[in-house]
Every structure is written in structure tokens, then in C-alpha cells.
Amino acid sequence: RPAPVDAPASLDRALAGAAAVVNCAGPFATTAAPVIEAALRAGIPYVDVAAEIEANLDTFTHFTDRAREAGAVIVPAMAFYGGLGDLLATTAMGDWTAADEAHIAYGLSGWHPTAGTRVAGAVSRRRRDGRSVRHRNGRLEYHREDLPVLEWPFPAPMGPRSVIGEFTMADVVTVPSHLAVPEVRTYMTVEAARDIAAPDTPTPAAADGSGRSGQTFLVDVVVRSGAVERRAVARGRDIYAVTAPLAVEALDRILTGRTRATGVVSAGAVFDAPDFLRALSPHIVLEQDGGTSGAAPHGDHRAHTALSRPATTTHG
Image: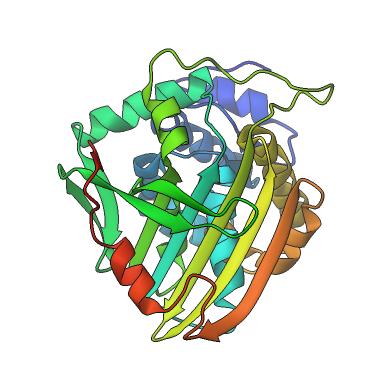
């Protein structure tokens, strides 16, 4: 049932009789609000796979009160970026109600972007006027500083890798939307960052009969409270292919009443995060560390202090 997003009546006809809607049509700066409006009119849940920081922030800003009053469930960023990191951070937190920092490091073997990724990225850059964004002191900050190149100690077999610090993803919206963590920092392996920046990087290519690419990923999440760190790790293949089971598992849980909240909610706020991640096997392999002090998975707190400082090489 095709429908243009700027035609409310067409959207209403498209959603007539539907149990829910999953918005996969970016850029979400254009599509999210009209489709959410249509979902509210239809009285059905809404899930999207937006990785656009500003679009996700808009959803929380403009629809939180209305969705809560309507008893609706609206889950933005239910995807590899935004949703998975939030589920891992929530899992790592465990029984903590607050933490000092959350670090989300993306160990991608490479990143061949889809056409949609490129269009969404261009929209975000225009909205930021070319600035970079980060989450510090409990809020988003826009800046024009060079992004540091650091070394992140990924667990074996990947091991330490060079990453772009403050390569900021949608986790800076989803994680602090429900967790009391004033510092949320995300990192990207240098190879993947170069791929996404290069205009001639090809789109993903299927590597087997499933249609998945050969890209592998390791998402390493560390939360710190004082001198104690907790960690959760997810491994898998093809960030785009993993978005599908994330969105479908979310939809199944919403429609079967396995939710913890209504309104505009992130994945970690509305679902049982560890149970959700375990349900994604074999698409995602989850590893969890219950918490250490001193000899933490990434070393002691001094390691994270070092991570906060720019290295001699920078990436603009």
C-alpha cells in the first residue's frame, strides 16, 4: 500500500487494519513525524530503525507527552545503531540506577553503506551545519573540534584497535533517555569510519545465500560507576541484517504485551534487555561481565581517562 508521507489520508488508508507499523523509510527527519502521527490516529504501535540523532531526538521531544496520554508505544532507533547499544548498556547496568559513564565501541570489520545510510547522513550533516555532536554533562553538545584517534581494547579475538573517538551514534539519544548516565561516548573503528566517509565505497554485497554481507561486528559496552566497571558485548555479522531481527523481536514483544512502559521509549526502557538480547541468538551472540573493580575488563579507570585524551593523530 504505497503512500506519500505528506498525504495524511493516504497514510491512514495504508495503515487501515494494520496491527503495527515499522518505519524503515529514511531519511527519518522527513518520514518519522508523519508516520508517527498516522500511527497515533490508527491507535497502533510504531517502531522505526532511525540512526539519525536529530530525528530520534525530535521523536522524544515532540511525541513523548501525546504518546503517554494515548497509552501508545513508540520505539525509535530500534536498530543496530541506537537500539542495540541501548540494550547492551541497560544489560551492563544490571541493578544500577545510575552510572558515571557509558562507553559504546563499535568494532566493525568495514562499513559498506547503503544508499539510505548516505542520504540520512547527508541530512544530519546539513542539520548540524557540518558540526560534530557528543553527549557530555547530561546533554548534547555541538562542536567543530577534530575527533581524536584512540586505541580501544576490544576483547579477543579482535583485540586492541584504533578507533575514532566521539564518532557519535544514536546511542547518545536512546541511552540517556532512561538511564542516569551523564557521559555517553561512542567509538568507531578507523577502517569503518574511513569506509563511510569515502564517496566511492560500494554498497553491501551478499556473501552467501542468506543475503548477508561478509561484514562482522563486535559492540563492546562498558559502564562505569566510581571504580567499578560492568560490561556487555555483542558479536555478529552484517549490521543491516541484524536490524531486521531487532525490529521484529521488538514488534513481537509489543504485540504480545511484553513491555514495561508506554509513550516514546527506547529499547532498553520498554523491554527486558538481557532477555531480548538472548532471544536474538544466533543473529547476535551476547557476552556479559557482572562487574569488576581494579582489574576491570578494560583495565582500571586510568584506562578510560587515557581514552578521553586526543592522540597525536586526529580525524576531522
